[in-house]
Image (cartoon, rainbow, N blue to C red; front, side, top):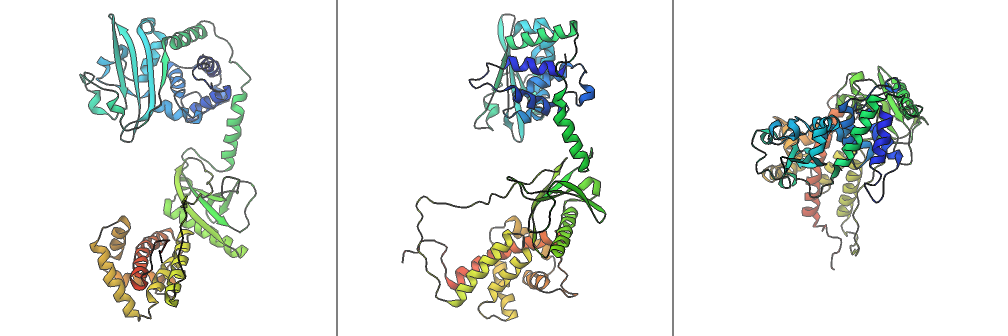
Length: 475
């Protein structure tokens, strides 16, 4: 049996599985996903390769995926499920759910006693997905064989099938989607499999199902994608010159992929960590260096957003959908503060938060520091204020940022660290202040400091000016 033949057969078998049956295009997407995940022969050159029983099992499991493009991933999850109680308690002594499908395809006795297979890829354990049940008849009794992820080691021991409750094993997911395959499904599939073996024929169709895949492979080749690629993807808000089409460019000794802005995605930079021999932070520094060159050449802004890494191909970065709060009954009654210093404090706080949100972390640190200077404190007075309130933070609930901040200080007093390594570091550029806003390690350090200084700034405004955080004053 060839893949194209199996694709048609499964589409026919699933025609009446729902009141809104899927289109044939959906099945095409499922099979493409299975090829992408290596669960079916991949590439036009393997179009005439006969499918193994494992291939057919994977295609059946791919039907369980709610979204067709996840079929390959779902097949991997389900084919490796193990029987509760070990092979002795399994359906026809099979060791995996994939083996059970192979038995149903080739063993008439197994199909004669088989009643139903029910499978799900819901979360059935902590960070663990997938579960299945085979209902069958033997010696005049209905029996159950349950299958769970291989990580549920305690359930795989002999005897654990006794008293096993599948409903309690799926408590991790409040709602579960399941798909069932009855005896008619496997009887028909087995017949088609046998006919294909007895009467070989050429593959159906003209191979056009590979056209899109080949075009995509060519696209990835042009973008420098390799077998072991692992890309960092970074969105960029900018007003600099950018290519209209995605392209691979050389920057210094590095290769970067640039993607254009679309209706759904921002302009973005992508760098292959493996090919360029960089870790995440080193690559982020290279991206920042690149944007700095562009900002200089175009005399305009280029802001790197947060990025992520790990994809085998460059992935477009979606436009930011910034969270906001709404209220059905919007009640607002506030006045401009009378105090000039209070007004400046709120202005500096807003600028600091804006800078922090948009990646200008040096200015966020500087503005938070300037807030504390508003009461005309001397340098030592500002240090003293930080000393007192940092001690209060240290003795209060410890967040990850606070813990990391005090670790960064090392042997240096925290208030001295804020003055020298934060305020002076970002306000000056002499030999004693070498903060580099392109360096990803430095950016991470300043982000931690800014998060702690943000807490201190809010404390300062509340205590110094008694400015309420409630939108309705009631006055």
